[in-house]
Length: 412
Image (cartoon, rainbow, N blue to C red; front, side, top):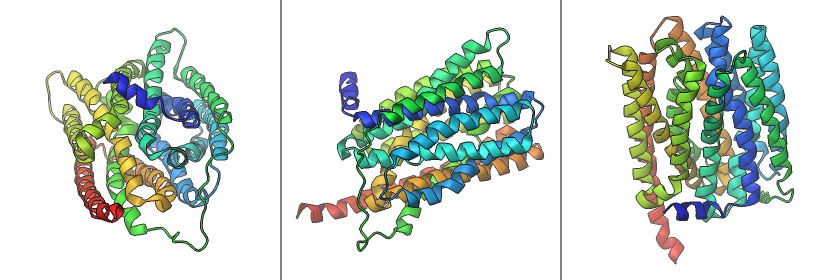
């Protein structure tokens, strides 16, 4: 079975692999900031509310960039946008670290906003590039690898942060500088992408208008889940630091094991989908992840024996389950909206995700200002996830019904 799975990944084109490797390098910056930047800011004396506010500006950057970018890239070469990300994101990250060192709040907000814009240039554009330049039979593997870059970068970052964190005189800033420098490796992989990429023709007199109803229906579950995720994922390190006393090196070790499970799980996604189908694969994994998140939240709300170890277990279980659904829901969304809506859908997917996280960041800031505990905030996330899972259930049923209704027409 393993041989069969890895053999299917060997068929992914080199240009696609170069894009994926470039995103992996930039994700080293992204994941290292996710893991320890908030803790670094907290140690510099910034409150949870201020940290949440700074974090939200990054998602605002993606939100402002995504919608116009989605319209602009239609019928255009995508390779140049990867260069914008490869050069821009590491440079802006260095300015962010400078601002953090001297606690320049306005500069932190500005650089966070610009980091969001730079990362958009690969985050939004990569999926349309893969769909354009990959055979339909190989798209599940290519999309799974794209999603796996975050997990694999999390594995590398978590392990190295734990190792570096136990070296005398090495602090969070030194570690973030090292990973930011590694981000420049993305330039090498982008330069290896063939300049003669496939660019679909945009017909001036064809049916090119966007089916907004279809796009909204496909994105609604993602929006609901994104609002919940934005209340949880960016602040999980603060939760373990504040509630369970876990410093950045120990949290990174926990993330190493979790991300390793996530990476393995994501690689298996195409096989799981083929064996169990979209409905069972997406709904079952997301439902189990919601139960794990609820149990995690209760370690703060209730007086649970061995609460820290229960939180560890729930965190390690939840992450792979939720991440397994990512490639499948992305592929489902692209198939549901159709070819002419894919670029704008990819942009809006990033926009709604980041916009929801921006909204969630403001909500988190408000809730923490009034000292609502992390546990209750995570329970709000669980409730939103339940709505999202039900929405995906309805979307999949509609997609399968539509596919069956079209099958006889295709056959004739």
